[in-house]
Amino acid sequence: MSTFDEREKAQEAKFAHDAQLLFKAEARRNKYLATWVAELIGKSDVESYISEVISADFEEAGDEDVFRKVKADLEEAGAKVSDEDLRAKMDELLAKAKEEVLKEA
View 1: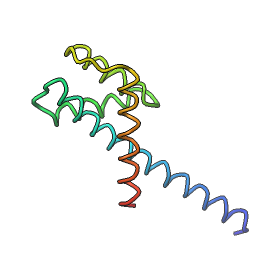
View 2 (view 1 turned 135 degrees about the vertical axis):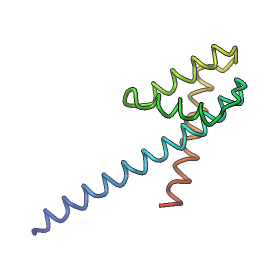
View 3 (view 1 turned 90 degrees about the vertical axis):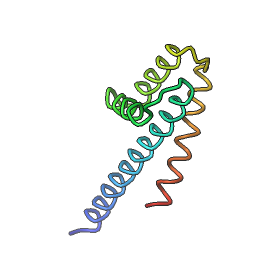
View 4 (view 1 turned 180 degrees about the vertical axis):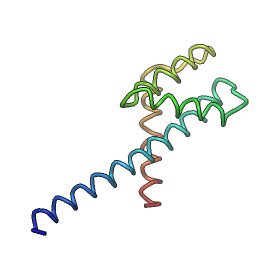
């Protein structure tokens, strides 16, 4: 195997590893977000709500599906959380989740 092939394989492995870590961090962020929103809207079955939010993340690529889900739930419950505050919370929780996932890796 040539040096180029070895380098290519290493890059592919790094990309796959990074993608896996990001997936874990986003899933953990969604769990934290769902827990936070459930508290705000008074959901008694938090575990079920966490599953709903995590499932919503598989609708499309990116965070917009999760944002729309929790935003609709907040509005339905009458909770006043601006789009900016919700996005900031999502960013904050993603940073926390990434840090935790990297420590575990």
